[in-house]
Amino acid sequence: MKFPAVFQFFPELEALGRNLYWRFPILQNLATSFTRKTRDTCDQYGFSADDLILALKSLGVRDDDVIILHSSMKELSKCGLDAVAILSLITHQLCPKGTIVCPTFPLYRHEPQGTSRITKYISNINFTYNVQKSMPWTGQLGRVLMRLPESRRSLHPLNTITAYGSAVKEIFANESIHNLDLPCGPNSTWAALAKLNSKIIMLGVDMAHSLTMIHVAEDCFEDSWPISDWYRYRSFTIVDQGIEYYVKVRERQPRWTMSYAERKLSFDLFSNGIAKSLRVGTLDVTVLESELLLDFLNSKKASGYPYYLIPLSRQ
Image (cartoon, rainbow, N blue to C red; front, side):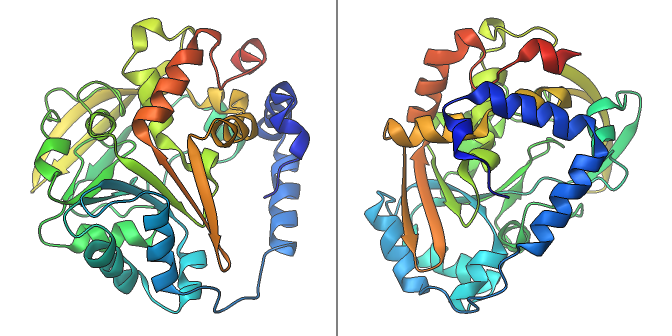
């Protein structure tokens, strides 16, 4: 869904709009109906897969990089290849010496949706995450990556990733069933990805909407994060290789979604040269480095950036 351009200059307006959207289900229904009516149904063939690889290389992706892929298979399929072929192309032609990482966030079928996602208390509900079997909702590339024999998936039940390649051991070096807490905290795979200065690649998805790496600036620097009551507790049974573990972890309170100024963040990242993009046929491609992103966020975090109208969202 397109957002008004004015939001990039007046982030408070976006935060106000988000508060209205999440508090009134009728607005969510209207937005869903509008999105369905304006959905793009053309361009079955929209770009060349070889051109995509060339574009990513031109944006600075090297053959030994650790790359985090956020993608839409609906958009990627317009090159005429399926998820298996696309992932093979990326693995063998783009980063043959590197590491491929995909978000594989587990689908929890009984999690609240819509307004209930913001308002319902669920810290007393236990959810089950099976490391090997729980299906992700974050795209087909991640599902394919999970099936590769030497891939590895996070133990953490939130902001879960799957990785394949030369840096797998480094990415998972600090993650243990006994130290799981914040999904992007000091012991997390996301902190390891940040330390490796992973390149974040967006393929056919909105950058700011998909940018999980921003939460490292919150979770790894909790003591300097200026907004109180940022987290809530969650309970999970984690099943790994048939063995069950009960854990309590923390995650960002969902209500802070209402303060997230995506358009302002996106505008700032492009304006400051942190994010770079190309259009390959019908596909929007964006690349940015974790280190530059986090340096920028940490330089502005005293105000709670990129979150606005905090008192309103707190209510």
